[in-house]
Image 1 (cartoon, helix red, strand yellow):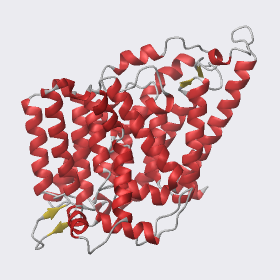
Image 2 (cartoon, helix red, strand yellow; image 1 turned 180 degrees about the vertical axis):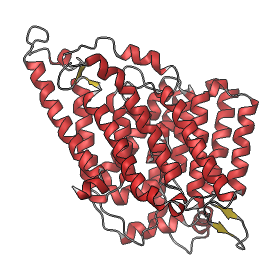
Image 3 (cartoon, rainbow, N blue to C red; image 1 turned 120 degrees about the horizontal axis):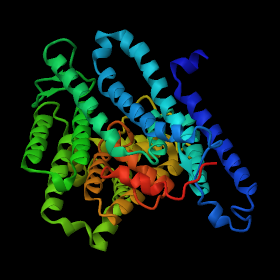
Image 4 (cartoon, one colour; image 1 turned 90 degrees about the vertical axis):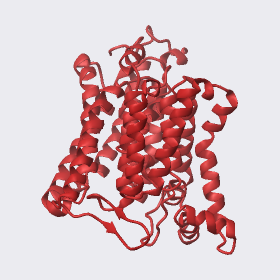
Length: 445
């Protein structure tokens, strides 16, 4: 009981697996006991009936509560990582020690209730949710990587949620948290990490590391773009993004975040000027393969690392020694099919290599194939803004592991479209209307 209070995610994940397993059995029983509504031989039609798990009691109340559970979980998670996880933990140690425990319980409990009691599933969606959760839970118990597990819980809970409404709250919570932390560090209220005399100035602005602050800035930029929408961006939006890029370069000097902010601005300008650039099949296929190509390139460069090769040495310097560190991680850590704890000396920042090492090939395949399918669905429906943001985070994954942080990368929310494969891919535009479309044909039982 004491371990559950301190670190609740393990217990809640086991409960989620058990709940979805019972939900699958309950759904099967409901299907077989209704021969007049769905004949036993018409399996295809049976599996398309959407039901709330464990009966339709308080069906309207549960359905109305569903989006708020997700919104509260997302906003609280944002506050926990962007504020409580700052160097305020040194200033207010009780906030970090006890506040994070309470916030963890609140976030995961909201997600769990949303997944098990406030979501409608058909048979195929329910089976997919259970299978993916079972695999990732198995890996999670071996590697203890909470970011991967939380990303899946958010993706599961995002089903039939008005994601734009959630983003309208999450963005100001994140921006306010980052602003308070940065100003507090400038005012001397909390400590900061600074680096001087090495040819460049770096300041973490109240966070534990420079690149973390850079990732926060990139996350805010992505949320802002998703909320504004690429088609509605004006000159002042690009000016704001450019100012954020300059600050990221000369403040924390986070190379990964700065490069990705430049890529974000450039891609948005291209799409803004040339709206049809993403329509050709060849372009869509290439962008869909982006996570798989990035994985192959990361693995190939790391395995082929040779310090005597001038080209590889130059690339390694450009990527801040991430190629050589990847080679070190691949050669010193054992191969684990179902995941393992990272070694104390393993400093692999490339997400493609990191999750191969700590999550294993099965979970890695689920992650990067999931992003590939998401990119395909986004491009197929002409969702240029979300496609660009997804591509930016996949590029960021070559240098950092924040691609699976649901508080940093809100594109993770959209993976619910890959997990459940609805008729229309969820996005951050007009999601309220699409939610209503998804509810057609739903039955209360």
